[in-house]
Image (cartoon, rainbow, N blue to C red; front, side, top):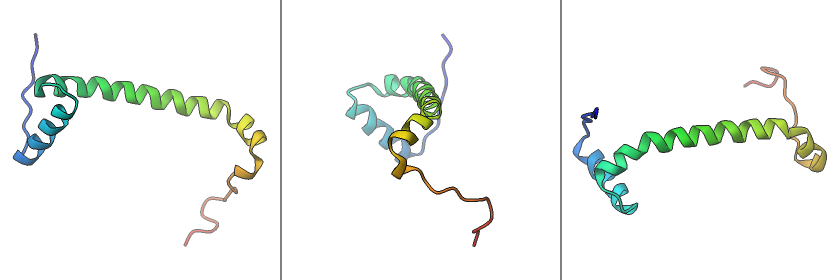
Length: 78
């Protein structure tokens, strides 16, 4: 199975160890899971942004006072 050596400063490693302990995981398992969690986070954010864009008109109709004022680019730039 492929493996990867990762270098941390002493301070970084202590932070990672503390985060692993907080989740009740070994350091190895915690570091293994990080990129998988990041992939899931990115997938969630993409879906949430897409859902928001799809339903923007419905939200604007339901909450007209929440629609931000439009600004032309550069028109009010300081």
